[in-house]
Length: 408
Image 1 (cartoon, one colour):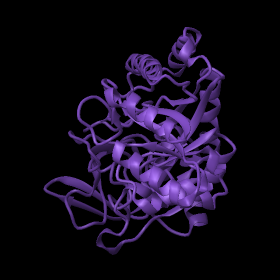
Image 2 (cartoon, rainbow, N blue to C red):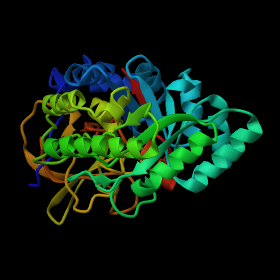
Image 3 (spheres, rainbow, N blue to C red):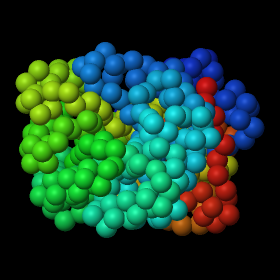
């Protein structure tokens, strides 16, 4: 048998069935109307934010990167829990505006921003994280035409990356941000142009479970921010330190040491150079805030045996859970945390592969995992489905359409 990923804390069973926030999986499916179904726990999201607030120094703001999960009820919940929001498109800007979120709390990063997106952001009063000198030229030109002073920061491509990160966002040639050595000149230029200078966005990487590496990256980020501010010759109002905190997905993964990370950041804040004394700092997180708070429920529609192997065929699949099937950048396929929700407290009885309903061999949710005996009608649960699930999967592939989503 191939091991399954670790089930996140906070889930229980009622009468042998998986329960989320005190509600059985079958009841959640009934409330949602059908499977497949994403369920996000408000209780678990609140618990994660509370733990972060307790661990991190008080001067550190917490931002939500909505790319992780832009579900409208989650945005509404986050409005009262986080300090700011980070977006990456005009479409995401529309979503946060529809949620009634103050544009002054929003920053907009991402390469390839189109002119109409820049115009929308400038008009709304969103902070734009500039990705290049060319983008700066376009922003200043559009702002002049609109007669609006733009809020501008520079996304820095640091000369280091986050060790052990799932996605490296800095170090070397990157499509993201302005190379560090070019930042001071660009910062002076946009300040001299009369822009509302908002500071730096420095994101070295994401999805790291190495607490020491995260601490080291944050220390390097603070050092870089100080050097760039000194070279620019202007006060640094704000600095987005990125995120990088990962969640356990696979066998052997362990959670980050939040207390250690928070203490090391607090220690670093005590020793800030004068140029950063008045700077407002934030962490930008998405997956870490919502990933473990979400599950994906799908129903077994067929049970079959082929060449001695058992296959449980479900009505969901990679069109909703691309990452869980190993098709979202995973080099070596490993099993996510997956279980039989209908028999959540039952012992392992058999080896089985759980596969989706799509006509492709890529649609494999769990490979040769150990499960209790499961049959047609039973519910399967995929954990760690709160981030990069519904919005990061090809929902229209083969015409199956999106899954239902609900916040409970």
